[in-house]
Image (cartoon, rainbow, N blue to C red; front, side, top):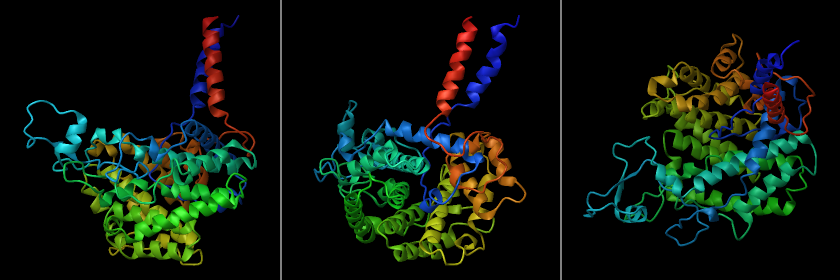
Length: 451
């Protein structure tokens, strides 16, 4: 007689193999919505599609989000104003004259804040006012719920309802809406700070995800994304574009030479696309490639402005993501233009050269193993655009993440060959199954163990 324990090991391995991919919030993402309505997705994307459904469901359970959820209020006294604190600034209370420890609220108001010696060192108390975290969650939820709706092709699906509700709550509903400016983003706390800083514009870098989500709902004619909502969102966006193009804080950020400038153009271009100003989006991205981009990658592929930071691995991947999305939006806004992907910097380097150099550097070299996954999405994109004739990109992804084909980015970065982990089953998908199957298998294993 065969013991029931003989089945335990294979069932446990089956359960582990079917686990959901852990949710990662990438810096930004812009995807041509046509992709989700003009393709029959191959079997090699089944795992990625499963993960998208799971992430959409997981994120939706946390929403909706609003600037009204925070405990702090901007110096304007209006809680509808977005508020965040500069992440790399730390208090220096040596001049306050107090002999006992001050409570946090007194530190924030009375101590001078400085970033001297703290570049790249995140002050954890900035998340005590968490508009930035709420916005990042909102952007991911809108993106993955909108994609899930497009994949289901079901007009009454909860996914489109989720996306529309989340957008309406953050941007449009009077009790919960955000005012269309960032005057108090990344404030440097202390007795003299009354306005935000130029770097605060970076807080909404994930706006590209929201724009992608809205374009998907709009193009697929979702019943939940009504004409009224679309018009209201366009009105809010035009006000915010005006702020981005006229505020001294925003203009200073737009002049930044490093990733801050790259993400400024990301955000502005995506918003131009949202309101139908494709010529404006083309001009914005063209400006980036004519200016900042020219000095961001040297002949070796290194990004010197990112390499000088205290977390160079992270910042290389970070700016690469912004450059890639600027290239995508250039292509989307002017599809008849010559390929921007072969655009060279003043030293003759391309986005591909920057990616190849970044891949050659281990995150362990700068003690950044926690940031290793930031690069993987960029690898997939470059492979899909430039090709992968020697299999170098797929080999890299296979080594660093054996389940890379289950990551959402695998879906929209086709063709990306060499998938070692494709799932079997129908190419159409009507709801999440991966986590349920894994949980079932693990449960059976536990039961059998107890027999």
